Length: 624
Image (cartoon, rainbow, N blue to C red; front, top):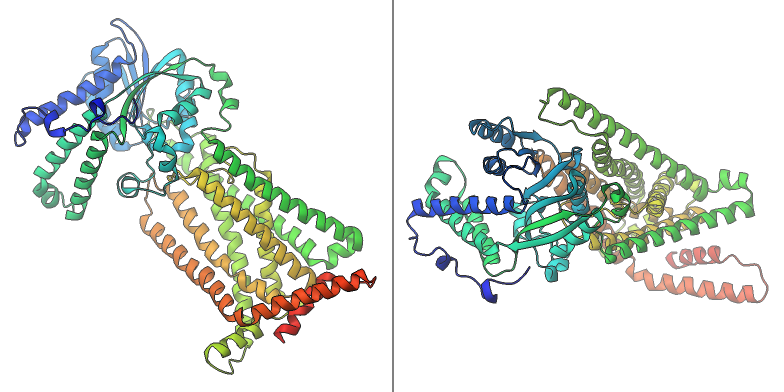
């Protein structure tokens, strides 16, 4: 069973498992390893239930260098195999090996994504490809396997797994040594997670065997072979000592994990029992847990409440002032609505541009592909475009808001005279520049634009979340690629929506009462940080990171810029504002409180009172 350490509950001794083979007898150990590898392959083929004389079509997802396909067709001469790979190198080498084995008429190696398979097969087989899929894509994987199988078809899948009892904490972790240095984006599913994803897709788990202890022996042999060839690896091949030590640790690390049963290597048999035609609707929630769905619902509820509150407030303003006056004079209504539509248009333009670029690149690539390479489907073009265009559109919007905010702050700082040095001088200068209560819109255009931009960006984000359908492609429920922390992502998203609602409230208040616009523009400089973060995400998505990293230097540059800008434009401005306004903070709060109490008393006495005006006027007396 999954998670049981060693045979009989005891950690295994890898040295004893090798029997009488001496440590320095590499020829025997090499033969032992090769025989074990073919035993593993044969065990996987046996799970398909093939019989002599069968003429079955088998799909191999992740064919590697072609060893399994060749072995299967040698054992069952009437069967045929289609092997999928995304690697040009694997495709070339596997095709070469197939030809050398004289099996080109029965084995086809193609460069194709498993999600693009449209043909039906009698069986599916896959060895340790599932670790590259990720928790959030488990339903997609099993859906593709199910669609590729005929009714009652069998899938033989080998995968390294995490025990169910530790799966939640594993998913919640940011990373670990292997995910950070060896397999970026890798993920070990659990049996429970796979069953949860496969069940709605019509696949039932028939049986599995844990070969983790055997893998521990394999890793020991790999490590010994590598270290025995240290001079070749470092000298002739030119790898660094650091690289060698990293992989030595990796092999030992995994050996210990398998030997003690902390991780498992399962050979599994899945049987198709459901109807493939009904799978699409059943997999809409995918492999999301109840916690993920609940957290996503919290974020959406916050967004809906905030959007509804603002729309109701705008409708009340329009009804009390008249639609014409509200549209012409109420900046907090017309300006926010107009800028929100502009943001939506920006995202649409960016998406169309990226979709066109992806389609053009895909069409150009398809012309150069051989018959063994399948063209990219329009659906994948759309997904890739959305994955890149979403952060790219956000970067464009944040760039505009950041420009207005930085321009406004620069104007205020250049107009301030630093009469004295020290904390007192800085405090006075900050108060003079940014804590001005009377800030008419017409006289503070850059600050108004920055505030409008911040309010509109927050409102657009809330609208997007409120309208999200809850599918796996929605920004509100899409987990971080390559890092399986889905629950944490949507929980953080909930807090982000609360922050967006607060930003919208503060900015609308400032615009409506034409007060503290300089202060809101000052804090809107945080969009510089958001711009660089969105730019970094765009680069990662466009390059295919972490699965691929062709633009590693650009990615590192944008990641560094994102980290630096976070400190420079988020941490420093907020800390400075708190430090420089602290001496007057208590006095201001007390003044506002007193003003509201006085206004409430006057209202109770029957006098007409504007609570917003009373609260806005109080800080002016405190700030002086």
